[in-house]
Length: 124
Image (cartoon, rainbow, N blue to C red):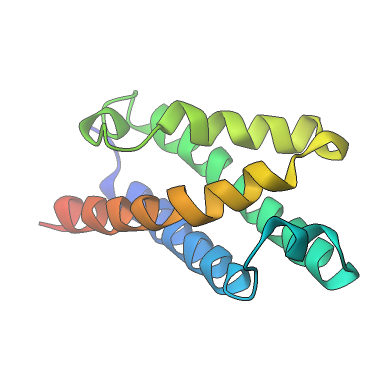
C-alpha cells in the first residue's frame, strides 16, 4: 500500500497546476495569441512551466504507488502527459505553440476532472 496522504498532497498540487493553466489560457483564443506578442509568449512560458510540474508530479505518483494508481484511470494519456514534461524540459527552444494550445484546449479539462475524481476516490 502507498502513502495516501502524500499522494493526496500531490494530487491537490496537480489540481492547482491545472487550474493555473486554465486561468492563464482563458485569454488565449488562437495559437497566434501565444506567438505574436510578448504577452502571449509569457503566457506560453508560464503554462509550460506548469506542464513540466504536472509531468514530474505524475512521475512521482507512479513511483510512490508502484504504478498502481494512474492505470486505474485509463481515460487519460498518462504516458503522454509525462512525456510532454520531458519534451518541454529538454527541447524547450523547439516547443510547438500549436501543441501547447491543443493540450490546453483539449487535454487539460479532462485531466482536471480526472484528478478531482482521484482525490474523491482516495478520500473515501
